Length: 310
Image (cartoon, rainbow, N blue to C red; front, side):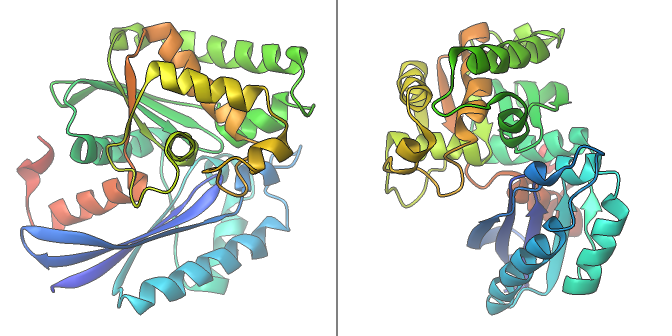
């Protein structure tokens, strides 16, 4: 083994760890994947700052993930932060605190870079060459159109699952009024993207915890969901079940991830709206997600395989 690389993705809903073992110049494997719900998007205050209680919560989760990474002899950590930290007015204070408490430096990446990493992962995991990429996070959603294995357009929209839940859902079970405002806002955001309809009739390659949770609800208990495919009709059935359930009822559904039972409605509304707008036939899960894309870029550059993503 050449080395073991840990990728830490400080997302808006969860902190995710991926540990990759590089065997040689042509082979690597995923040794560990773990996450902790930290819900940073739910900790953005009215003045646009991350609340103080989010600081130790995030640091404690990162330290637990770091201990797990070191059990796999990780020698290098690649650490990034996404939309919730991007938009927080006190992101510099927050990241300084994390460095003090964990010893790790996190890089805030742009929405465009986030979409690029998602593309790297989805292309490798799903094997699709023509698809619409959907990465549903807690604070933002990244969307790309891909033709012949090449991204043609990308955008990051602030319509993540936790952010939309906080903004629009004030009832349980959700009322018709709350649902109308949620659905209308998401539809307006999506249809404002001029090139979106170039993705008509394409399958959706889906990243993010919300989309993977939908797959778990469809078929609970699988060892892995990499490449798991759901027809559009089945996604609609799961969505209707979520929509008609209270949060406590959702929490008891087989396959529901703990801590996602409230925001999954808003998150799935993005996927369902895209399916309806574009007549997408199916959704294919890219399980390893952003962390895989970050690792692939590192592997490509460090081993001088520049042709890999061309």
